[in-house]
Image: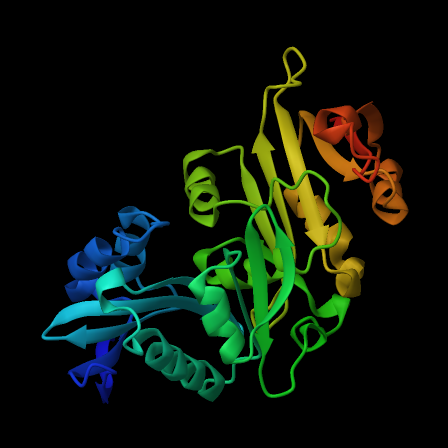
Amino acid sequence: MSYHKMKDVVLKDGQSAELGVVIAPGADWQKRLCAYLNATPEPEGSHFHRFLLTQDVPGLEARYFVMLRGGEITGCIFTTDGASVGYINSTFVPRTFRQLGIAGNLMEALEADFSGRGGKVRFFTTRTGSPAEKLFEKVGYQAVWERSGRTGMEKHYNQSTWEDVFSGEAEDAQVEEMTWAHWNPHRALMWTREGDAYHPLVGNFLTRIQECAAQDQMRWKALTLLDGRLVGTAVLRPHDRWGKEDLVSYVLDLYVHPRFRGGTERLFEATMPDAGHVQIFLDRSSKETVAFFLERGFRLETSLRDDFNHHDPTTPDIGVYGQTL
């Protein structure tokens, strides 16, 4: 795939530039893009881009929209999408090239590209009050949450909603291994996850994938629909913090979108080990979820409410539920 020129652009300083897109894999662009993106204030790591630019990942679209002037990269917006859900991973224009219309032109191009390929919703996070926040507001993105100095923003296309993304029947859902193709759908599922308990599922996707490949006892399962949409996910990780003697101890995190709770049992059975001590962290006010695990032999072992924030009365009462198999 690699590089495709999209159009010529005249920037605000009167200089000409070329706008194009690198569609991964694009090994010939690996060194240039890795060097450029690792100079950003919040680099994702060269190993991350090396992987995406050299490996073909069916089901995952990774695109680097770039502005070139004299062959030099002067701006880049990196996006990924899958199953009609998109995520903007990073936006970076060096200070020496700002105020020239580079970011605006890149945004116009990637918006037309995503919408033209049938995208339904795209989202991202940025530093609260950053130039990116203002830029994305101009093209229709709305802030939907703000916490810890970060702002979450999203945009819906062709009158779509999250309900369109998570539509379907629970009986159509099937369990499979988590792969790179699930990266964006997994982000979307976590984005819409309600509650604020302890979520081992929320974290670095690359790290989780590597852990699964390296650890025989780790399991990461996906509950998906036939078209690739992810509606549930569960991860089982070896964990010895509260281990019992002569038993392998695990931490389980399982989440299924409310519309597809009929598939929870399938996901649960596919993820649980044959033997060991399994613990899961649950918000004790989530009666339906707690009941599901109690019915399957889990019992309350301790509460971590004070460990989260005992000064805040709104902090959820997190219970540690366990079962020995």
